[in-house]
Image 1 (cartoon, helix red, strand yellow):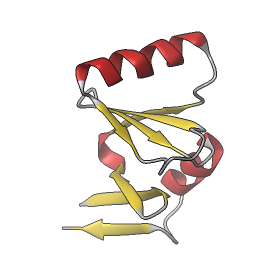
Image 2 (image 1 turned 60 degrees about the vertical axis):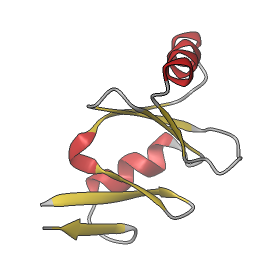
Image 3 (image 1 turned 90 degrees about the vertical axis):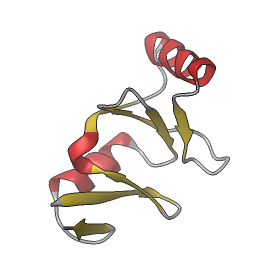
Image 4 (image 1 turned 180 degrees about the vertical axis):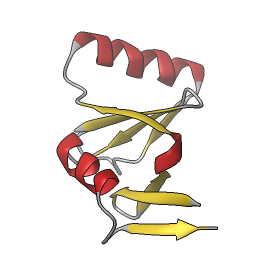
Length: 87
């Protein structure tokens, strides 16, 4: 079963495909975002707001979210609001 994690503003990602959730502030993360943008592997789910979390997926896609990494990590670790299961 796939668990969907709400990452803000009606957007969700598959938790089983999530590799890591990191803050976007460091230089290596900024380079990763730029590289993903240039190669078409970026998904901007921040809805035009400030990016506060970078989600790295197992497919190599980089997802930008306006939620804090701690908030997303808590949603991954718990079952409840903002999560659905798909069979």
